[in-house]
Image (cartoon, rainbow, N blue to C red; front, side, top):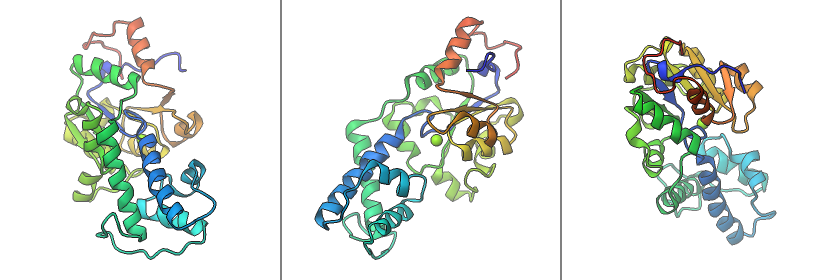
Length: 258
Ligand SMILES: [Mg+2]
């Protein structure tokens, strides 16, 4: 843990990545994939059964359809690609991918998703201090996840996968998305803070010129995050609450630089 943390409360704005920073979304994705693949594997007698290890080896970090194709290849099962318009019932690569997306949406709605407690506490404090907050996420499900987590109202802007596609923003690690987030929030990146748990995101924020890039290490590793552009790394955003508690936390006019 760093000895001195920057004062987020003095920043012009704070932009948060969503998945892994505000919400433990990966778990919902993993459960949705497992439900879909368990059913397909059982029905087609595919061996060995699908495991969480397969998720990390073949699915995680890939585009949805590429993940399905990669996993099926690992079992030497040939599945037609199909088309992105395939219904979720279709036994094609795209159909299976769409099935997963439907399962993810259902899980979100039925089980909800709780934000990380430390993240929730921090955005509550920042909002109370009047610091403009935004979300910069590659996910096309960002609005749904924010709503399910009950935290959408904290954020003045959300630049997500839907916005990126519409406005032709290059995906992280290019600076486009964080730059667009700062612009939408009306803040200067050089006086603002970005918070990320992925190396691609930390690189994006650093390239966009953010004064502070906070890396949140949920398993990526502090060294990897620093190498990608994080100016500091914490295990959890509650670190900033403790720092705020030990100084004059709620003073929004603090002269300390972010
Ligand atoms: Mg993330």
